Amino acid sequence: MEILSHPSPALKAGTEEFDPTTDKDLGDLVRAMARAMYDAPGVGLAAPQLGILKRVCVYDIDDGLVALCNPRIVSSSEETVAEEEGCLSLPGIGVPIARSVSITCEALDLEGNPVTIEASDLHARVLQHEIDHLDGVLIIDRASPEDRREVLRAYLQTLDRVG
Image (cartoon, rainbow, N blue to C red; front, side, top):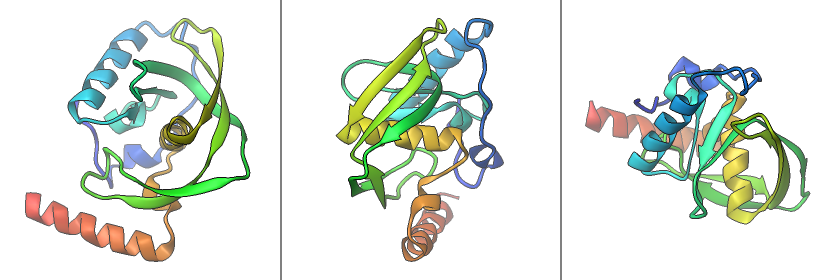
């Protein structure tokens, strides 16, 4: 499966929650997402980045593959840190994004069991990034107006060189 690039409409569509216990294709989807993420290479991928509008994401921050269904952030620290983030759907660019340093995420695993994740630092950043994708939000949507203009200009130049 190919990772979609901005401005694909699927990246802005958002997703609906679903029941992982009744989704017969979920295992195949997660395997395809993991393969695409590792091939890119990246540390996270959300289903809309493959044009699939299911509320599922995968990530691996060196602890092994994690797949989450219907993830949502239920609490986040007031403390934020701005760091440059990249995105597989906006290849070749980085944007400084302020994110909560720690979060609590609730989700379901592939069998439909509830999971709660207490995450901080990179783990929290990756979860916030992937959940943004599930809500139709890209890193450029979180950038300051100046950063957004600069990054989009650079991104369009990259596309011109490729195309």
